[in-house]
Amino acid sequence: MMLIALQVMAAMPLSANAQSAGSTAPATTTPIKHVIVIIGENRTFDHVFATYKPKEGETVNNLLSEGIVKANGKPGPNYSLSAQFSALDNTTSGTGSYSNSPQSKSIYGTLPPALAGGPIKPTVAGPAPFTTLKVARLADTGLASGYEPYLLTGATGITGGKLDTRITGAATLKEGVYQLSGSNMPYDAYTASPVHRFFQMWQQTDCNADYATKENASGCLNDLFPWVETSVGTGSNGAAQTKGFTNTSTGEGSAAMGFYNMAQGDAPYFRELADKYTISDNFHQSVMGGTGANHIMFGFADAIWYSNGAGQALVPPSNQIENPDPQPTTNNYYDQDGYGGGSYVDCQDIGQPGVPAVTNYLQSLKRPVSPNCDKGHYYLVNNYNPGYNGDGTLASAYSPFTIPPTSVKSIGDSLIAKNVPFKYFGENWDLYVTDPTESNSFDEYCNICNPFQYETSIMGTQATREQYIADTTQLYEDIDTGNLPPVSIVKPSGFNDGHPASSKLDLYEGFVKKIVNQVKANPTLWADTAIFVTFDEGGGYYDSGYIQPVDFFGDGTRIPLIIVSKYTEGGHVSHEYGDHVSLIKFIEKNWGLSPITTRSRDNLPNPTQKANNPYVPTNSPAIGDLVDNFSFSTK
Image (tube, rainbow, N blue to C red; front, side):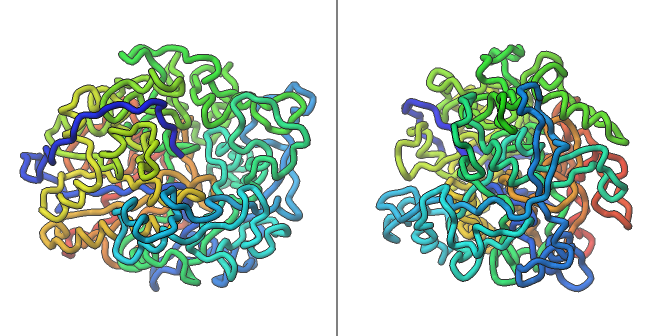
């Protein structure tokens, strides 16, 4: 999930909270005076809410409602809707190019095997799982009472990349989804993490205008997840494919097709919140791909690009430019892609690798979609270090895989301009400031998750860093004292973010519960607060929901969104189409802010959706502002 700068730097001490609820922020357009956005990691809606049943009178679109699975997790009458295919990218002759929708497909008789991932056994001092509760409590103070023991449990006992014998029938899986949890695989267990990079996800979702229908206007079939996992995985930074390559060589297998079963007790706290408050079954990750790009889109409502650090677009080093064209004689093994390699794309240039496939698809839709890419700009589409270390020093001096500081405006700049106090609360921030390489095993701060760490306007001076970025320890103090800023963005550490293989979903539940309980314990704060609980992206897991293309970068698969507020009580399931930028649109509407820039995604209109097909915007591309999820007149 994280890329870290390569040298420890000294840091300046952080001050106490510099922004308070007493600041003279403009009046809000709703009774909501405080917004808290909590962002976890890497789970799709179906992966978490596969078998969720809402209250009577509400409908939800998930694996259970579609008849893909039964409440017991077994295949349902429409199981074939989740069927997955292998493909040939017609490049075995060495002459082919990347396709986001390969045409030579064959349905799997048996999926590639499910493989294990995550810690094999507990450790003494981290990362989790830990050997003792004393060490666990020293390392992690971000969980609700009763969740700390989960820091000791869930080790796989299986070498990563080997057959996951905890999963029933791991070597003989049917052609579609399967339940992760079972008699040998408790909900509280570490599991493998599927690939979730930009060009891989375009292939996983298999979007093609020829497949479009009235019910599925984008033509995304979501049927190539295991094939992408096993044919390329995360790539290898331009290195040649290994000899003897098989469907287990990437170490992923069919991890993408696993789901949890709420009907059998999985994800109990998220189910409790869904039953009492409001969820969306039509909320999406805003970028195809992973953590960094999605947090950037959340913060900027746009992608950011390679520059000289002073606003001038430049061409990045050649080994940092994505090239998803398959290597000669391979089936879909990219020329240049990986966790430390290519991550920039000039998506305005139709001659760049990978660009024609996505752009031609967007332009061939019944309602053509603009890629929204500026000439000569190489946009970041995957995970790179932000331009700054926590102490404000430049990260580029210590790692070549660092995007230069950006001058693109963020929602933070908009809030500052209108005198609306805000703060980004990153768990372990205080420790990270003095330990940017995370050599301390307790330091699990996510540097690529903080959108403001990419921009000069926030990171350029000590005063602005201290004013707008803090540790979650400050968040807890601010909630207790009623000193919370109007807008709070909260990111758990790698211990608690729920990322598969490195964390667990129950730990993210515990992180969220701590904040929700603390807010509700302060009646004054609870009276005017909305807590948005979501994820950065689907993590490469399968999802059956509709995907709306809004530009070159996305949208991607559905992710959970839970809205916790006294104004969202009732167990409602919203079908309004939205993505991460919908959270920005809510903030803008609530405080009377204009869109961040003339090209940012928050300029898109709210969707119009017909009752007979409530998931597909008829005015695409369009994303909602979430305001209609609240019932203000009845409180």
